[in-house]
Image (tube, each protein chain N blue to C red):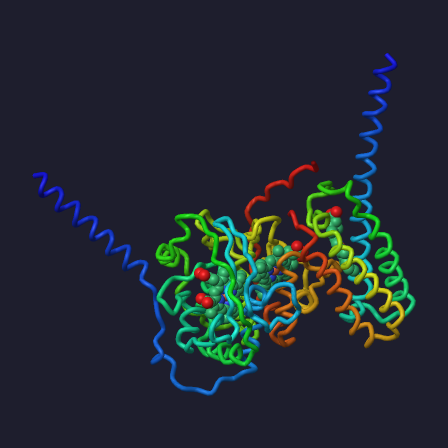
Length: 308
Length: 149
C-alpha cells in the first residue's frame, strides 16, 4: 500500500513538473520564419520611436537618444531592474545578435540563451506588433553607434527572480492574439489602435495591475497607481479625456502640453520625447483611436497623504 | 502664568511660521497655474488656430511667464520641503536633494522665456517658440513634480 502511494506521489510530482516545464517553455522564432527582404530604415526608425526604446535603453543623463548603452535603474514592487545595453556593440550590446534572436527577444520576451525576459521589458505589448516593423527596427538599430559598457545585474527578490516562472506569468497574462484591423473602422482608426496597443504600449502604464503585475483587462487605459512607485497615472479613456478634442490629444503627443496649458510630467515627459518624433499623421491616428475609447472608471484613488 | 503666555506665544508663532510656509506652497501653485493659463489659454490657443494672433496678448502672456520665472526662484525654500496643498500635484523631495540641478532648470526656464519675449513677432515665430517653452516646463516636471491624483 505505502509502495503504491509513493509511486502515485512520484507520478504526480513528475506530471506536475512536466506541466510546469511545458507551461514555462520559451517560444523561439526560427531564422527560417524570416524570409529575406530589404529593410525599410525609415519605418524602422518610426517603430523605434513609437516603441519608446530610448526611454529605457538610452544611456541616462546625456541628450542623445540613439546611444543605447543602457544602465537606467527601473524600480518596481518586485525589485530594481537595470536596463541592458542594446547598442550594436559586439561585446556589450547586441552587435553579435542575429535578426531571429532580436525578433524573439522583442516579440516573445526570450533571450538567445532561451531564458525568459522579465515583463519590465514591455514585450507583452510588442508581441502583438507586425513582424515587418520589428525587422525594420532591428535594421535601424544596427545603424546606430555602438556603446561599450554593461549595466549591473538586476536586483530582484525571490521568487520573482526565477526566470522560468516568468513562463507562468506569460501564460496567465500575455495576450497571444496578434493585432488585427477592425473591419468597419477607418484605416486611420486602425493605425491609431495599432500604435497605441502594440508598439506604443500605452496600456502598460495607463492601466491598473493585479498583485502579480498583470494588467486588469476590464480597466485597460483607466489609469492607476504608478507602477514605478510614486504618484498616479491618469485615466486616458473618455472618462477623463472627454473634454479633450482629437486636436488636443495630437498636440499633447507632439508638445506635452495639455489643453489647459499644463505640461506632462513624470514618465510621460519621456514618452512625449518619443511621440514628438512621429509624423503628424501617426499622432492624429492615435488621437482618433483614444477619442473612441468608451469611458471606464479607474480604481479608487488612495487619498494623498496629509502634509507632514 | 507668564511662562504659559510665553509658551503660548511661542506655539502660536511656530504655527504662524508653518502657515506662512503653507502660503508659499499655495502661492507657487497659483503661479504654476498662471503659467499654464498663459501658455495654454493664450499662446497654445493661437498656435492651434483657436484664437487669432494678437501681439499685445502674446507680449502680456510672455510677460507673466518672465515674471513667474523670477518669483519662482524664491518659492522653494528648504522650509517647504514635505509641505503640500491640494491633492493633484506636489513638489518632489528631489528638489531639495539636487538643489543645484533644480536651480539650473529654473535658470534655463527664465532664459527661454526672456528670449521668447524678445523674439516672438508673428504666428510663425510663435509656433516655433511655444514647443521650446513647453519643453522647459516638461523637463522640470519630469523629475521634480509628482502627480498624486
